[in-house]
Length: 182
Image (tube, rainbow, N blue to C red):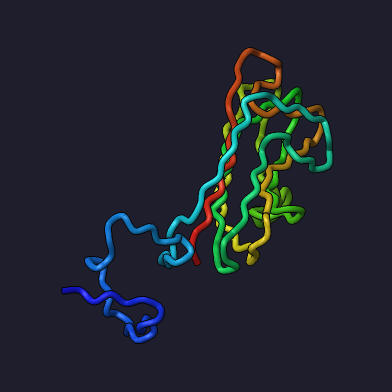
């Protein structure tokens, strides 16, 4: 016959490792905060997509509307895996450049000589160039954190999700963030 233990009869006398999975009712609801996920586990996934176009002739980096996502890490030891997939076209002789940004800090920049950003050679109204940025970030925060794509041009203009010559060739761009247990 099982012994019923209540808070008044000795819950504090239960020793570690005496309750096993078989002792827990299959319908028991255990709070997620009580579970410990191993390092490398995916804790949450957030994503957004852009299915309209964005055009700019800015020679300074600006946010690309619709390609940002905010995530609130559950631990300062968590890592955030960021994946951005997009297409860019251009008008005329142009080389658009792109940065991945966390809040106001540029991250994921290639090293070496100029350019120090993701650089697409898009000359003369050609079909959009596909690009993908994958970056594992360590933001060390439990505050809401926004990841976004920024772009600029060397001249003329660039466009996201369409060819530079306004041809009827469109696409969808996405940004996905995953919190990984640290």
